Image 1 (cartoon, one colour):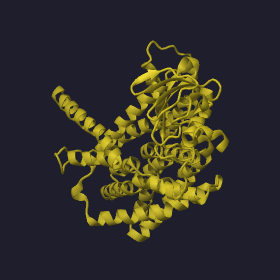
Image 2 (cartoon, rainbow, N blue to C red):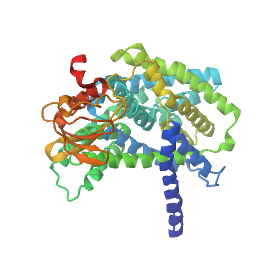
Image 3 (cartoon, helix red, strand yellow):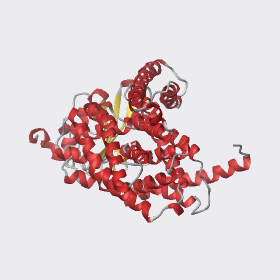
Length: 496
């Protein structure tokens, strides 16, 4: 495939315009609570053969670009996930990504075969494609819902690790390898790829962190590039030895993101921006790949039936069995069942049989596309409401407090920016009454656009922005104390 300068100019024109519109769509999404991925998919469909007429039917290219985008998304997820959030629920997350996925594949396959009349091979393929949760959807949605760490940690670990075994399954079935090698061989292959990918990710993560702490690069902008290069190195290295690149990149990014590296804030910001770009390109491309003229009522009905089997039977059963390794309350298991968010991953997986020319691959792709759209419309916007009904929201999460952090690398400290909203009981509290941990202090207050240096008797007011300097080792205690005062006022210490 060759491209001349004129074609490149045209691509830059349309690509930049679509990217800018997609960025503006994030604002629309936040106001309407409509998941942004649906807007991106709609943009792709509008640009495609049924809209502006841009033709795109290269399944192999879509498959390759889709995998590249998922690598970026998983890297960003690992880099921005605190290990303290994931560690308590890692057993459950790993169980969901292996045992839970297996149960989900079997239940959806049986349901699709007997309810929809699909051949066993197609039914198992559909079950495998629909079983993994989507990392981009989980990372973006769950981090704005005030949930306990044991729930967000389990769901994020599951979404980061469950792609690895499923990709092997889908590839084996699409290429006819299941009949050729047998169940035992393929089960061993999946186990090897997952374990080897995890091991290589740990190796690259710890070795890379050790090297980065000792490297004196001439520009701060090189550090984010170096960290992401290490993440991609873990993926490429794992793929070279036929291990799971997706498991490797997520684990390597998780290790690097939780290591004491220079310019961590810049690295995370750069990774977030790159992940947004990857999501935009991925969803628009998948929308281009869809041919709306192929969709009919039968496809929609099949998607509804498969979605019901997945949501009502497969997901709850897989969560219940997986939770044996780490029991949770029934209402927490119910929320995890409902929070099995699907997004780009199932659609990308559906491009594998499409690229391999598997039987009924186009019909399977259309069915998965419709199901993901329906699932996203129902599940994503209702998550906050479901969390409230099931009473799994984090009680200590303040409604009137927003905190952002900017690391002070040389002294291993963070600068917290605290906004006192109208609902916060921090209004009227004196600075000295905050009783922050020793070593933490309110260094500045921004009030009505003016900065002032506070004293112990300075009274805080609604709308104030506090700049709090805190040693990194005391950050959690300091944030917890600020939340307590925000919720209960100056008597928080005695009210419990």
